[in-house]
Length: 178
Length: 225
Image 1 (cartoon, each protein chain N blue to C red):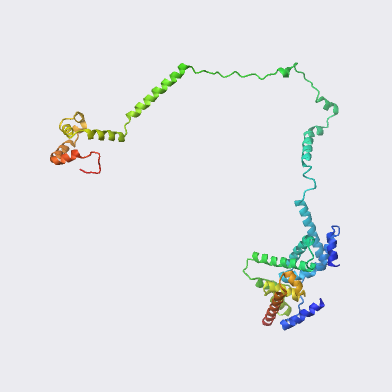
Image 2 (tube, rainbow over the protein chains, first blue to last red):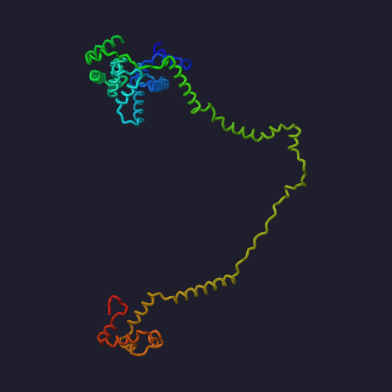
């Protein structure tokens, strides 16, 4: 079902819940993996995904259609993920920086193998600064065009290209040196 | 979408060729049936929140408009509650309003509360007023006289100083050489142990010293003899 059709059904109280269920089914996995790559742990990703979709439920009536529905949902998911990490950092008693804490979570993941290239890639991503981490994930995993990314992150395409370039180089260096 | 994927791969090949060969497949695991069950779990959560919001924040339509009438109705029903609960037969209810006991004719019209006797009022006569005035005058004189008897040190000093200044040197000399009634009658001066010593001290003084002493202001304590 197309987004426009789902939005029309959502406006009708009789079909509101059905339309929303369809919307969730359509985008849940992509949103989940976007969140999971940022917060690393499944339970945290589940909480953040629920909060994201609750906000979508409450805000869908005000959605103006200025951007694609999916881009709008991605923006909410990104903001929720970063807020979650910020809160977690404040609650943490250990004085670790973000990258160290997230790397530890990757190492604690089920099936982690430090010798496997795929796990090294995950560790390398967690060592990136926050903005570069988001840009790299959106481009590398979600294959998002710079134009859509620019709307989502409210940053110029040039700046996003530079961020992605720096991130890719840092990751390559990390993999080669670890 | 496919074009974008090709573009991303060539871009990565250009920036970081080693990274382009790494498989991007995620090895993170998700609990079984997580995505199948997620929409239902989410809708339960939304429904729960909706019910919670409805309970906590909303009031039935027209609730406040009808509230005063509902309260009055309840007050009336509370007042009749005892009777209704007893379920009395009609004939018994009718008897409630029928007078059984009789009172003398015009009893309530004549009924008066007994009056309390008035308090005694005493008038003030002219004689009694003059008596109070006389008593006040006598009391005032007594107080004034008593106060006049109390000489303060300042008053005493002022009187003595002015009087001594009026006495001539001859008068003072005469006073010193002639026997003084007060000093003679004073046991303190005549019989005191310092009298003989005082006489001896005075005998040692020259006339000039005595004259200086007599000229000196007796109340000027800043000068020493």
